[in-house]
Length: 249
Image 1 (tube, helix red, strand yellow):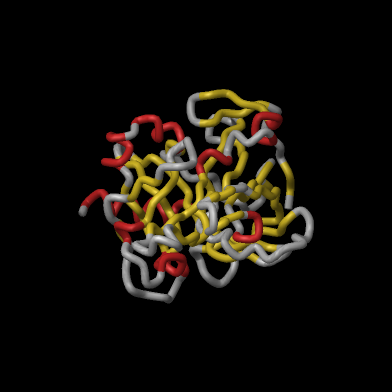
Image 2 (tube, rainbow, N blue to C red; image 1 turned 90 degrees about the vertical axis):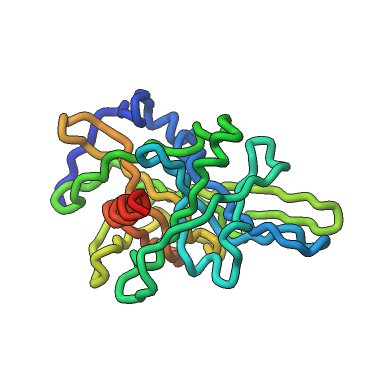
């Protein structure tokens, strides 16, 4: 596979950033803990992995996998405000079909549009998704970054209500198509020394040349499952199809 690297600076939506900015966490703002608000006074919230936040058209959406929230009330799904103490919940959800023929049918889109209207400071945490990345065949991305919240890195102390949220980020490469056309498999740059359970719903961003031969950050997809040396993610073009259907509802 040939490699053609974009310039050392590239576009993140309408802002120019450097690889150094990415290393400092410029892309991690678009993923958060997926929280379930419980009625139980002791177990006030449950962790269900990761949630990627994007803006599509005029809608502010959280993207995860349905297997993450099995048995939960969609309207009890929430995220922290920036203060890390207040939880705001979604306004409902959308999925394509009850079908398991491909992993794209496991997608769940959560609508936070009304929540963002009430808390406009949340808007900057949603990536403006308007373009899917170029095909991976023939040219390797300059960078593939996976971010999320594996349970291993989170700290939740029930006795004093403390919740310590820690984002995990990993650079991956070697994107490969597999038998499921909605998925890409990528290899981690090193073997993880912990169980990555909880990474589902995490973000995958790529840096590639756009149609104007400029380096650009693309939303590549969301993690559906991961091992210690590989990640499977649902491609963003399948996610875009789901979003178009959601906007029609």
